[in-house]
Amino acid sequence: MNDQINRSAIMEIATYVIADSREGFEKNIPIIQALPRLETRLGKDHLYIQYLHTAIEFDSTIGDIAILKTSNGMRYSSTG
Image (cartoon, rainbow, N blue to C red; front, side):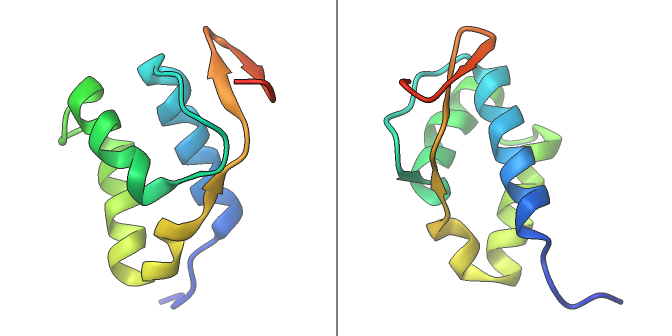
């Protein structure tokens, strides 16, 4: 079993969940701070939200990863 988390994959999942939620997030918000709003919007049982929680449980520093790009509608934007 691999005992490391692929941080690139976690960022892809976080980016997808944010786009799917259609929530606007401020730049540099840590994943751990974005999760409550994502859960409210998509539900705690959303598969990718569960993946993010599992990754954070495995390695708490995952929650500190900052979201650098936000979704503007369905288009990605570095301006939020």
